[in-house]
Image: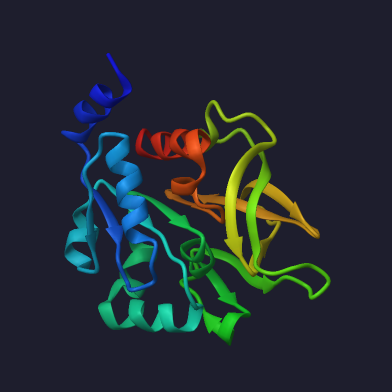
Length: 206
């Protein structure tokens, strides 16, 4: 059975919601899922998100305005209470933390850690390919240490007890997190080639 056929079979039992809150990058995630044979819906409707089997929370943009959109739609209240598997991507990961120095925004508090800005001694944003050192997590099944993935960000999550991958850019920081049913990655799996495809498949197979 081909990967695409397997994806189509899985698609019959997967109801995937991609949270669309005006922070960009939503369609590229949806296109990445389509390449793997999965259908998904982009939505800001809490009921649809709550009833999904899997939830993906992407984002590219400014934290404080993104949080305002999440509060206005009711997603800010809903997301930390979700019981299904959730994957935050880039800004989505940062907004799942307690707070961020970007706009001094208060986050969703899923991960009890604050997001910091890179020091001025490095070029920001941190943009391009970099490696990840991974823990023994289901999200990184068949992903070897020092695999390359694609980053675009000016703020980072320090290493903490929920870190499941780390990357070095002037400092060692968390490039992925996991707490219970909540997963998050600072990099963009949808832009990370075959490595990113495996990570997305792993998330959908959790």
